[in-house]
Image 1 (cartoon, helix red, strand yellow):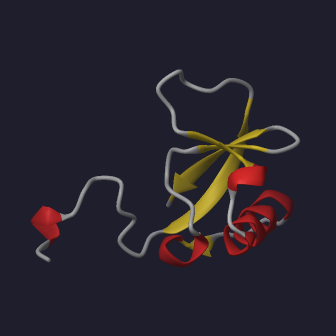
Image 2 (cartoon, rainbow, N blue to C red):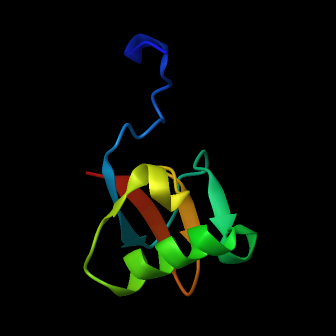
Length: 78
């Protein structure tokens, strides 16, 4: 697949972090932690509780989506 065929939301090897937020945009993709696969939850929990980043492809998370946990967290690509 040529890079021009990739969608804008494909992370292409970027690393991800999460940012605690107060409110979410109405158009944002929102998932509750109960909806995450076990491996994706583990990746999210590591991001939410440690000062770290993870490889986007391995995490199961998408940049811009909101994860509802104890607070709302936005997944961000670096």
